[in-house]
Image (cartoon, rainbow, N blue to C red):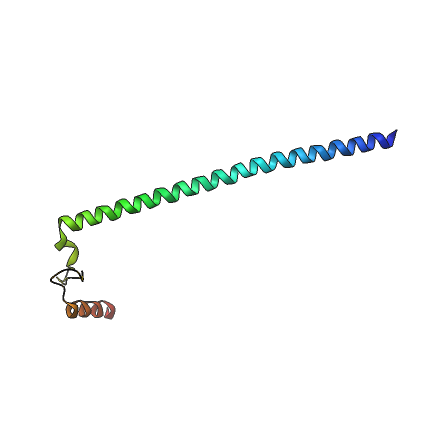
Length: 99
């Protein structure tokens, strides 16, 4: 009779370990999924913030283009501007790198 109770105890232990493993697996997967969801939501929020900042900058450029195309020294840095001077721009860059 002692072998029967030993095998029953082993079966109870095996089934308990299996149930615990399944429970742990489901709870761990839920944790991983919630972390991935939070990271995805944060990345999406950051992307939206970046788009808003870019849109604000473009709107400011559209409203006052001269403030964004000329530097402090009056050199136009936007190559699409009609007043763009490549020589002055290159001299400005070389002077900035010489500092």
